[in-house]
Image (cartoon, rainbow, N blue to C red; front, side, top):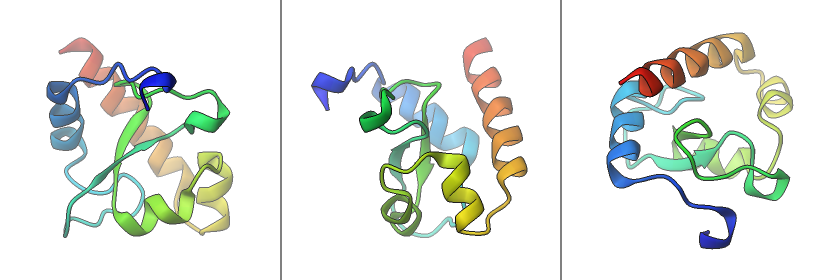
Length: 96
């Protein structure tokens, strides 16, 4: 993880978690949410405030290192809703 450029602070993770309030992909609120990179580390992503979203264990495991939009389509999730919300949350976090 350190080699991938972990620029995400604990405070930023807390802000991301509060902003989403649930799994970014399915809306699950039960259980502990995990940090998931929208653009996976294996594809050049980093642990940053603009690339990390909260994910339930199931979604995080299912997505793995797949590209997010392809995975959303394959898993029949609302790609547009996710992308619109992601842009909104990132904008809010960057303006805070």
